[in-house]
Image 1 (cartoon, rainbow, N blue to C red):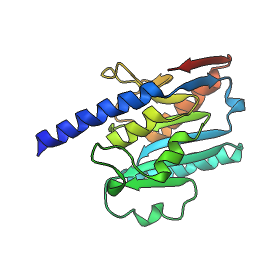
Image 2: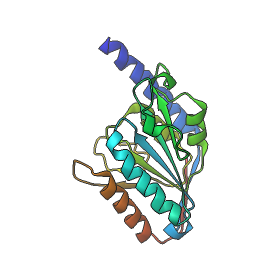
Image 3: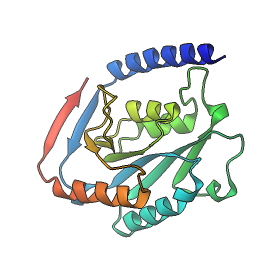
Length: 189
């Protein structure tokens, strides 16, 4: 069974590589004051982190930045605290195809949304979330530094010691984004 899963994952990676190669994304970031939308990719199985994400959402809402969170929950039913939240969309195991790709209209909508910034909080590197991060049309992507990934999807990588605490991570991401002030545009093919 494990061999079959590895083969499916390998095929999934090949398909993802082809899709990424076909997609063009304009990388652009000028200043945090110009940010109007942030997308967050998050491992929704980490129930205790939801309070931190809600606080972050409120902080950004207070400065008129729209935050959308997209999570992956590996179970069959979402926890009650995730339902009826406007800024949170989750997919479950049933929304992932046989090659571990997120396969739902909500996932496609999130991928095609041109967020000003995408923040990856997929610390355990769950494949359905990696798929979304790689294909996202976000103009600027932020994630954890990883020695293993030569073809990182991130435009800004944060190096933080484990265990990564989500409040501190989000605070550091925003602080670093506030430091960047030049206008830079680049098209990635």
